[in-house]
Amino acid sequence: MIKNTPEKNDIMNMNHQGKPECQDDYVFRFKIEPKNQDSNPDTLLGEFYSEQIKDLLKIVFFSRDGEKLIPNEFGFLNEPDKKYPIKCTE
Image: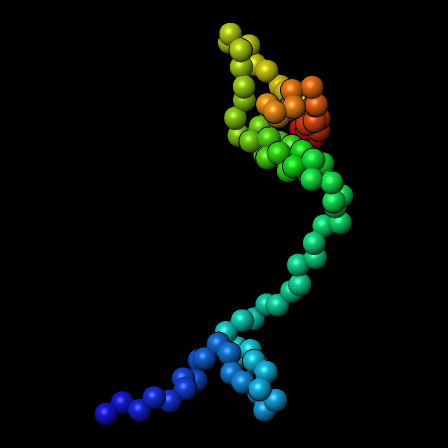
């Protein structure tokens, strides 16, 4: 008959105060600090898509009638008059 006993390699064990205690399974521990960003949702959304477009432009290019285009701004279809810059460093 197999007896149900805790394994030596359990990820979490309880210490004597009832709090979880990490074992040797995790070697590295670090805290991820959030970025200090503006709380305006329009600004955050614009910055998010700007970063996504910059990353995309590192692997693809756009063209029109065989001529390469390098965009320097973008906008959203629901607000066509509002433009967001794309600050490419490359």
